[in-house]
Structures are given as structure tokens and as C-alpha cells.
Amino acid sequence: MCRHLAWLGEPRSLADLVLAPEHGLLRQSYQPRRQSHGLVNADGWGVGWHDPAHPDHPHPVRWRSAQPLWNAAAFAAVAPLLHAGSVVAAVRSATVGMPPDETAAAPFAGGPDGRWLVSHNGRVDRSVLPFRHDAESVCDSAVLAAHVLALGPDRLAATVIEVAAADPGARLSLLLGDGERVLAVSWGDPMAYLERPDGVVVASEPYDDDPRWVDVPDRHHLEVTPAGQVVVTPLDPAPPPTP
Ligand code: GLN
Image (cartoon, rainbow, N blue to C red; front, side, top):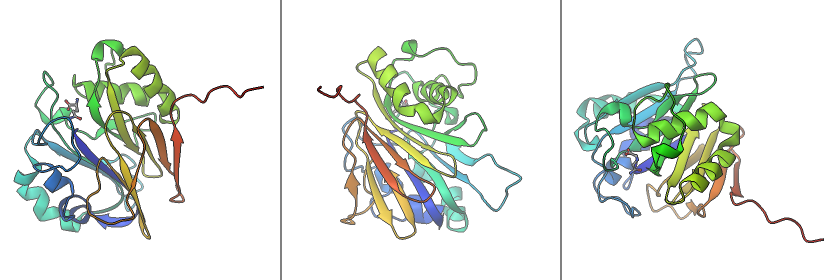
């Protein structure tokens, strides 16, 4: 995925999050502002969300497509009526050689309790990742998502550092959400967040010109806690303290 977004907070409509912002994912699908790899994101889109109104259905709901988001008339018609307090959404610019179908479009889903959504912005050499029969696609991002979830979201930082060591050319910016928290890593592609009174947006680029957007430095881990606090930590291992 070349542009993605996560929301954690009060329920907002999917239209308000994905389609309405002046420079949101819809606009970013044909005119991103901060994209250094690829020009447009027309190879598909996906939106995943957790619906607290249905506690008997703990798994996230997803709507994905291999079409450009600007063609998603059915989604645009319904999105104003779909509300969620936890969302991961993406528009895709497929890496050369990766499959073009909707199973390769983020967010991917899974994890120990099936509650996690994962979006990857970047590329990775699949040969450095273990084969996983539960990857949703042979797309590098799907294999990486399955790997990250198999090792556990709580060791996301360690997993990214290991994968980057095995493939130094990898770009590994990631967004994860399980309905309670958002976890993210900036590694090779940009990331920013916006704290609003009703929640936090984390995105590969600001969806508007609100001056409260904060850039996440490269190679950092970000967590939005269940209380809505944003914690940003450098990923490179800290040097040992000098005696
Ligand atoms: N490698 C992923 C894909 O092919 C994501 C690409 C991207 O971030 N542009 O879908």
C-alpha cells in the first residue's frame, strides 16, 4: 500500500475518514503529496474496521477492491452510514511483480485472536521471510503481515529490525490496529499523526493542512494507547550507557 491511515477514537464515518478530507485517501489515490515511490495509488484499496456494536463478532470487518478508490461508487454510497472507532484503510500502488487482485490489498487481518488489521507501505524481499501458509496473498505485504502477526504485535519493533537486517533495502512502514490500540512503524516511507479531541489519526501523509499534524521521524515505533495517548520511540537500539 502506498498510502494508508489508522483511526482510534470516537466513532467516525468511513466517508469522513477516507473520502471527505481534502487530501485524504481518495485524493491520495490519484494525487498524493508526500509519495516518493510510485505516482498514483490506483491498484486497489481496502478499509477494515472494528464494530463495537457487535461484541459477538470480534473480528474486524473489511471491504477491499482491486479497483481505484475513485471508482468505488458502492463504497462511497454507503460510507457515510458506516461508523467505527477503530479503522485501518489504504490505497495501493502495487510493487512490480506483485499480484493485482483484491487479496493483495491491505488491510490484512489475523493475529492470535483474529482481531488485528495490518497495512504495509513499502516493499520487502519475500525470500528473507519464512513461508507462511496463513498469508492472505503471495504479495510481499501479505507475507510480511502474516510474519508480524505470527511473532506478535507486541514485538513489532524487534520484528521490523530483524527483517530490515535481512533485507537492508526493505521499506517497512506499517500500521496495525486491533480495536484497542494502534501500533505503527516508520521505516523508509513517511508517517504523521494528528491528535484531535475525539481521537488520533496516524497516516502516511496528512489528510489536510491542520497545523497540528506531527511528523514521525524515520525508524520510529508509535503506539496509540487505549487511553488515546501517543507514544513515539526510536527503533534503533540505544547505545550502551557509558560507564
Ligand atoms: N509491496 C506492496 C504491494 O505490492 C505495497 C506497495 C506500496 O507500498 N506501494 O502492494
